[in-house]
Amino acid sequence: MTLFDNKTKDDVKKAKQVHELLNLMDLVKKQNSDKPYTNEMYLKIKEENEKHKKEEALQALMKELHQANQQMLKAIEEMKDNDRRKKEQEELESKRRSEEQFEELLKTNQHNFKEMEEVMEKRLKRLRKRKRSSLR
Image (cartoon, rainbow, N blue to C red; front, side, top):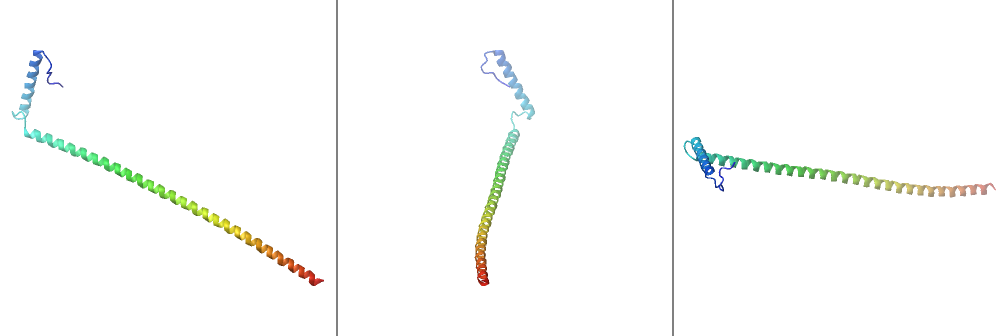
């Protein structure tokens, strides 16, 4: 809404604008007990403005807290995932070491078994040889 057209050269338009302004001033005075302006209006506007600023600040703070909370939850989830992956990796490594130890033990046992088998065969041969010698 434009109250004044300051660039107009039309005298009729200028007079009409002045008349509208005076009517608006009369209306404001009537609403404010014949005063063009009241301190109550100023205080009310100031109070509403402060209330609005506080609400905006509160909303900004709530948004900031929400974002911080979301970041914290994300960090916790990442830590849980990292811990889970680390545990899985440790379990796999432990299983691999156990399998290696088992394979090593199996090889050692097989080697020992072969040595024992060879020793037994040698003894058996000696015994057979003795037996043949004694039979002659």
